[in-house]
Image (cartoon, one colour):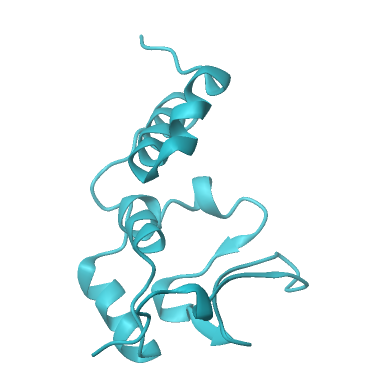
Length: 119
């Protein structure tokens, strides 16, 4: 059995997105169940969200949704990762996560994107 040491693996997870996704794969495989096909949202679901919102999702958010976005055991134990159909723009931010009592919302300011709108 391969071991996964959070402290040992964490620096690589902070280096870049590929490191982060490898960290999540290792964490899931050790502490939950390995990531599998169907754990993420489809291209069609994400494309539909972009069309509805009129903007492109940031690359990292899109990749996360594709890799493990449906895995509520990894994303929604306390607070909820919104489905692509529930993503919304509020106060010039793309809201993707909601605290369990809707007292806090997590979002990404749109102004920081280099090219957020669809052509």
